[in-house]
Length: 164
Image (cartoon, rainbow, N blue to C red; front, side):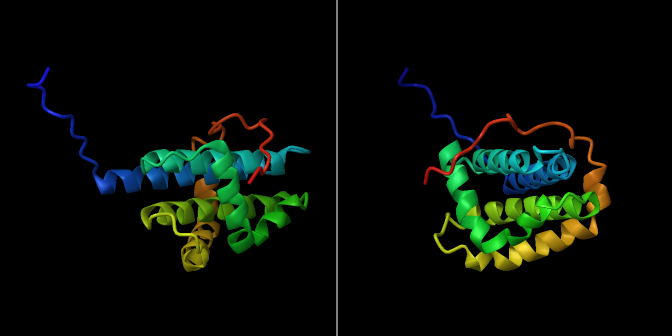
């Protein structure tokens, strides 16, 4: 079929940005709903974050497998997610905003990191993270009322191991 024209896919950056932001909000809302699960909250929010990273890669047409997503989360944790430990304190009024904020902040960082070509130095994204966490904490009720908060991004019972 030599006469066939090559298939061209036109990608609208605004649509892609909207899809990625929607995914970050969904993952953050989900984190707020699951962080308080007795005995499962921390493991489940970790799985939620891994799936968000993988799905964001797909939005930007960059394959990010489970192992790579776990590695990305691990490397970003040292720079951005110090507050994640506070989600271990069994006090929902503290856990929920922290889980929402850290997951949303992580998602926004991953978005910008992918758009920047996946640089090794993550420190340049600290302001993106801080601004996103602030936004999420100021809008925690919006996240808590998200209609997708009860819909998992993937298999939350999966035990991800950092094999990097």
